[in-house]
Length: 481
Ligand code: F6P
Image 1 (cartoon, helix red, strand yellow):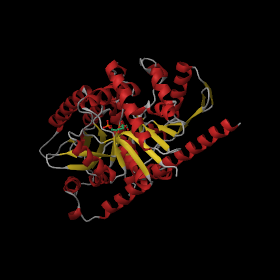
Image 2: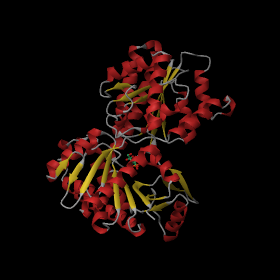
Image 3: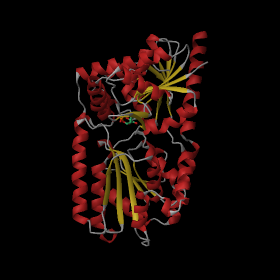
Image 4: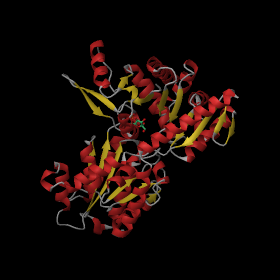
């Protein structure tokens, strides 16, 4: 039978090692949180890195056994590969370049060699587990070379690829010394999926200009086959968020978590008090300093809101060994300290800042309690947090401020849209979100809910799979002629 193998750098669950035991924890980030429910419900195998390096063969065996329970298979990375492939080429070369941070992009031959070796290692792990004609779905920028390695070694496989981050304009990609290898690597797939039309358009233009292939509408014509390009904006597990939000809402106050009770106390008896929420990995693409500056601007311009509104900012630690992430952490710590020092009172913290991950139930509580979600990435492939917030607003009382640089802004047109680099505009958007009428909010939330409910993560994955199937049929048909 035709099986599905999913592969991504990080598995949907990571292993945490303490002195005595190994435990499974959910991984952070849109890819893992979004695709995990699809994986659970389908008989797929997921191959990826479990986030730790085993020190003994016995430990490697224990990790493998733990992951098997989740239908996952590990690809172990050495310390050296983590430095050069993960922190290096993936997160200090491709990540900044694809998010238009040219000044952070490092070109380093050792990083590139390691990236190639690890992509080969992933492809070999897939090949060792793939039966004839199996379908392989490769995900994201860490594995751009895998499709072509698979194509060369196992032409029987059906290969789909999805990019979870932006594909940048040709003007950016052209500066990469390994630009041709990267694009050829991706073209090993039968079908390439992107979140938005713009990312797909940038990819096609790079293929034409760098490799000179003919393109007809969404087909790239190679010598002996075609590669299809299409747009699939990733969705969330809508029903799960809606169901949990309904449960949270109906829970008696004394049964709520400590965090939720604290929020309740802050709001209690003060109908004008409001909560603004932001949730991201601590990443320079997320526009966190700009967001804090906009909040400061707002408190200066509208002093009547002091003591009436707090920004709850959850930042999840990420890629902590990469220099830019460490610098950003310092910058955010200082900004939060400045704002709280300048405006805070004995009774009020303007910014309530968490630098850690939070259990899923707490996230739902935050989404439910927040009056406004303030999501202002400078660049973001999609931003599933925006969709999760909207799905959790079961009482329809919430406003969403969303950066126009997030892929999600294409589908969430009713949100209050901002250019995150425009600090006064973002401050005004905060004011607008807080002063909108219930009717306006409800109208916007309902319209967005309808859209993201229809195109949820299951629909996203099944549409990708259907398109991949029809691509294969067209290829077979073409060869038969
Ligand atoms: O969605 C983009 C993405 O880079 C995923 O590929 C990744 O798993 C997630 O963000 C979190 O990043 P990391 O795996 O580097 O912690």
